[in-house]
Image 1: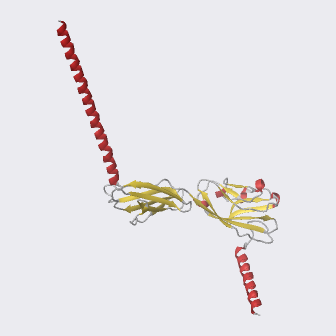
Image 2 (image 1 turned 60 degrees about the vertical axis):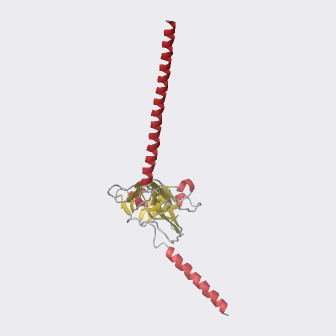
Image 3 (image 1 turned 180 degrees about the vertical axis):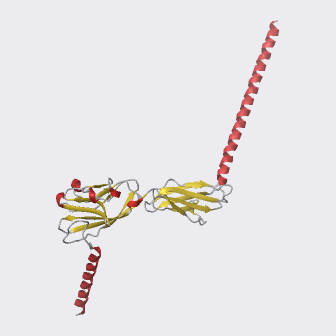
Length: 295
């Protein structure tokens, strides 16, 4: 007798949970100026990464059997209209000025409600909503989160100067989002804690310039590497610097062989000159003796 009750309780719980989920995903009101009798949403959430300065496709699969002349399509960010397609036309009067000449819909080409957004900038990072359906019919909604990113320049690793007291500086510019800089000593995590990393935003582009400083005393024959990690793009850029002692030794090892080689060349030239001089003198003496004998 207890098992049916347990099953009923479980069924009631699942029903309440499903109703609660639908309530969370439900559209609260009509989209823009479209008259709607019933609203229904398809809660499809996906994260798309776009590269700043390039273009990206925001997916929104819609009913392939729906005729374009019957379709109402709105791409929005809350109340801001990114682009629209209403019964076979694209009225630009609904489009926000920020997206003019930057969007393209592919309704007629391949019966999709996806949108192509070009010339990406930091400001385009947002949550986009695709609303589509027939007039006076149920409207469907697809949510797409757009994340933007940009690669950093190759990092610049500067060795300590005379007045920096063993402080190494690693800098990378023009990336997004803010990167993390790691330090390696001989390809292993450096034993010293770097100073507070700085991330400065370029006001005109919204991109970051990141800098990290490490106070270290590097021993002979060691290498120091800074790694700039862009987690969003999963890209690591690195720069390696040899110890000053290694650089000095390499210079000394280069100078010494050059000096030895120069000395050898000089000695060889002198020896050759002496040999030629002896041969010349020997030939001259023989000629004189021969002349004396003839006389």
